[in-house]
Structures are given as structure tokens and as C-alpha cells.
Image (cartoon, rainbow, N blue to C red):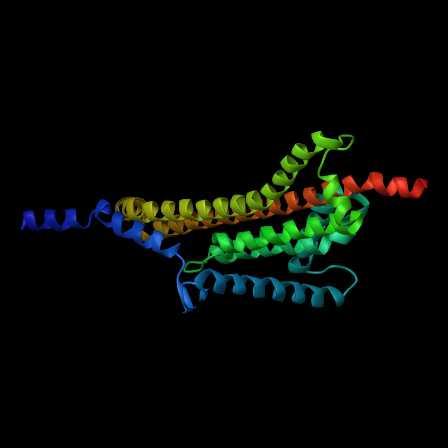
Length: 287
């Protein structure tokens, strides 16, 4: 009987369960087609992205409805949302774009809130953040890329924007290779925006998931043993819940930081385009 118990204990050891738990974790980050086919289908990431988008829109509409009821902000929700919008306005728009921040505030706020909403949905067990898919982050990067190029074309015209890619004061043959380098560097912004957001979000979720698995396999049994000896089941359960809350808070913080970086870079790219167009405007005014 003793040997049978030892064999059962060995079979239930955390190391024996680790392989299956890691396989489940990797499968949870895989893209599964919910409807359609592998080439064009409605995937789990798209579904939860739409859930995050709906959550964001509902939150904004509720905030606006509550805000209109009183001239003075009342309640934690309204005050918290106003602080959030002021943070976006002051730190990601006005401080970088200067007097033109109002033109781009809606776009930049939408980027930030959308990424944050996906990060919040992503920490819910069983959910998949849209930003955990390279397709979604690429779409966001394309939106940012097209937006700041459109700003440059609107302010300088197509030819003016293309000319602005080459350093000012360099003409002729010397300008051609520099123009190619600058054009390639501008295109790289699209790639870096998409890949940076995807890698950080995906890696963050994988690390948090792996930590949760290791904690549940190794730390939770230890807590149960300690609880029987001294602490009691209630104390061990509370400690375990607090640990999970900390893990989720760290993951949300990572998502907020990545939303901030993505939006800040988009704001910087817009500011660079607007600065390039200022000399042309000054010449026009001078004439």
C-alpha cells in the first residue's frame, strides 16, 4: 500500500502536470476560426476585439450621459473618466502637438482607449485581447501610418510631402539616396508600431500565463499544506486571491503602458509632419 501511495503521489506531482498545463496555455494563445475558413474567418481574437470595442463605446456613451446631468463632475466614474481624458489631452496631445492638438485629439484618444480596452478584456480568463494578434496591431499601425501621412499631404500637398522626405538644403543627385533612406525609414514606422505592440502584448500575456500556471502547480499546493498546519484554509485562500489580483494588475499596467507608447509615437509622427510643413507656410505668409 505504501508503494501504491508513493506512485500515486509521483503521478500527481506538479512536474507531471506542467506539460499539459503549458500545452493548454499555448493553445489558448492560438488563433481559432469561429466561423468561416482559415483564409478568411471570424476568429477568437476578432470576437474579443469587438467585445472590447463595444465595452469602450458603451463606457464613453455612459460617461457622456452622466456628464451632461451636472456641470460639476460627480461620482468616481465621471471624475475618473475626466482624469483619463485630461491625461490623454495634456500628456499625449497638447505637450507634443502644441496649438494643433485639437485637430488630432479624437484620433489619438480613440487609439489609446481601444488598446486599453483590449488589455482589460484580455485579463479576463478565457478571453483573448485583440492586440494579441499581429493582424489587429498591424491594422492599428496602418491607421496611424495613413493618418500622419494624410496630415502631411493635406498641409503640403502630395509633391510637397514627398519632397519633405529629403533633408532640406540638399538637391540634385545627392538628394536621391537620402530621399530613399528617409522614405524607407518612414515605412519602417508602420512595421515598428505593429510589431512593438504585438510583441509586448503577446509576450506579456504569455509570461503572466506561465507565471499563473507555475504558481498554481507549485505554490498553491504548498499553501494548502501550510494552511493545514498553521494558517487555516481561509487565510491561504485569501493570500492566493491577492496573488492573482497582483498578477492581473501587472498585466493591465503593461497594457496601459503599451497603449501610452503607441499613442505617444503616433503623436510624435504627426508632430514631425507638421513641423516639416511649417517653413513652407511661413514662406507663403511672407509672400
